[in-house]
Length: 326
Image (cartoon, rainbow, N blue to C red; front, side, top):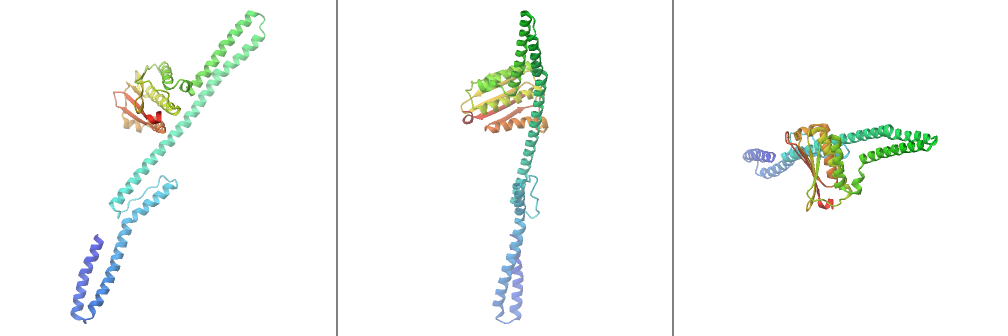
């Protein structure tokens, strides 16, 4: 608008002056020729001014296009640079694009950190299982072999009976160790009896291991859910109770399961000292745990919410739509 106004004002002032001067001192046929000359000059000047103004105003779109092209190639660090001649609306578009890329980059960093943590946890779990197999199961099997050789050389019936009794005890201990490791890796009760039974069994084991009593309540006993929904709900409860044991300092915890008319809900609450949500999200270890729970919930179309404050405990709530949980 300023550029076109400048062209109009310049044409009016200069053209009027030249026309008046020409009419006063030149021949009669000249004004018509001047009119065509002024029209051509005005048109060319207007096109030139508008071309320059539009190039300057729309130049930031070229930077945005280049940034999007770099992102499509996989460069999430690309950002659109600010242009001093940018239109305000285009500048808003640039800021929105950069903010979206910042969030995407942060999300990718969290995913990479979570993947690293998962790999580390897998390796630690493999090391733990290997040690348990070596220290418990392998030694139990070795003892069985030794007892078998002793049984083969038993001189009398009573000695053989005592050796066989020892063999039964060792066999039972070895089986119990293998069964315990299998249950820690994945509770078979979750597949056989469903979510409620698996949560109750895990709550008993958790209370026995940590000394924190866990009360499992059901507002309405849910029917059997799809396997992926039950697994996500169980892992969220598992992670939430692990956070209770590691961070909360709570004296008790409560797990609630409910199946309403359109929503399946799971909540884990404790009476611990709580925490600031922003500080928790800034804490790398805890935020990765929360991030993992959010990712699990999103896999089944659910929503995870967190309510906590210093001095009033923490509540983790998982909501899964009924059409997914059906």
